[in-house]
Image 1 (cartoon, rainbow, N blue to C red):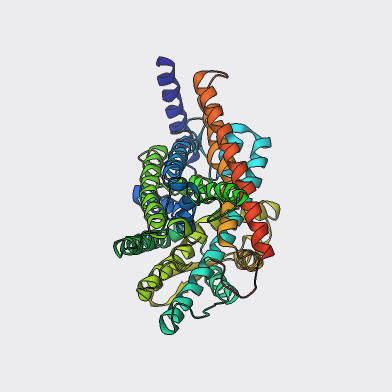
Image 2 (image 1 turned 45 degrees about the horizontal axis):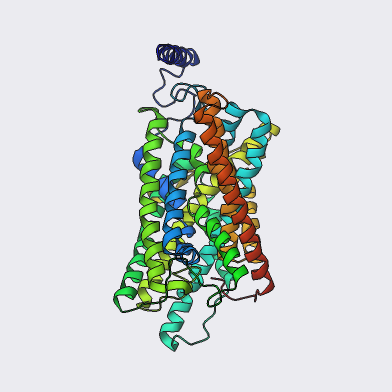
Length: 486
């Protein structure tokens, strides 16, 4: 303990010396790294996390519980929440290194991996992280289009009856969503979209509450569908092989529902320096994960109670609910508003990475480094405009929209993203970074149980990926263009 206190004292002294030497100590508008003063708080960080976590994943939880049943379903939800919170707490200590309080800042998840684990694992992490981020933005484009289409279909069912042939095209809705994202993507960074994140967090809670209320109303109205301890019944609802594949896919859907670790470092980089960023981030993670798990449990369990083994893949767009149609519409509007903000939370790290690389590659380019400030009317403030941002970010949004148009499959796509990203980004790298930073001895009890946890999560991810790929292949084979895939 004495050695640990001495190391902390040395780190504190070194940080203070570096701050004084850098010349930033006397600049109240700058942080210790010379960047613009960060102003994030526990509230804004919690809002970012809730925005990132409560997304389209909540919509498939009733279906996931239906595959697993009353016993295993809730247990798996709790297990994923505990693992996500625990690993997020480990990751929060890696924002600064080698000391979690006074060390050098790591601005991205990848930089944290490089500082703690070296270049080789940094490259592996970068591939996993950015593939996941791209996948999430494609998934959010799909989900938003489905919800926009569900509004049109809900009104159609209300006018023409529940058996009417009400369809809507995903493509038009995806184009509209892409246009909105092109505009929002011109905002430079996280610091400029804090308000959007808070609005999106409110929307996520709103549509989760609406789905929860509709489920309760359906149960109170006398709905008693078949719901069993083991979920969908072999020979009645599904075949034996379908039961296995769906069980695996449901693990991917639940994993996706807790996908936010890959943007945790970027969120933490918005926090003010005092109190210590890692402590604030741990509290924000606990608040965020606890809030989302409460809603997930209620939505998943009550959704299963309302629909039983025939729970739809998306309980607000699969039309398990028809009335009151206006409330279904409000829920889907909230989904759209939420995912408009969540898309930005997940794509900003991609933007920052590509633009930082371009600036280092072409430091003298006016196209890359030039920026003009436009003064907005009505006293709305200044808006920075960059040619690089305009071209590159627009191209990215268009490409994700085209990919979503090609594969508009909600459950299968989200399950695959969750399966592929859960183990490396949520579990493996945070565990490895923590053990490296804390200098955990090989084969010690801590080293052993953390590696057992990592291995178990790897097995879960592989099974979930297999189930989602099988579901995706099946969906492609039965795909009918110009209809809503819910």
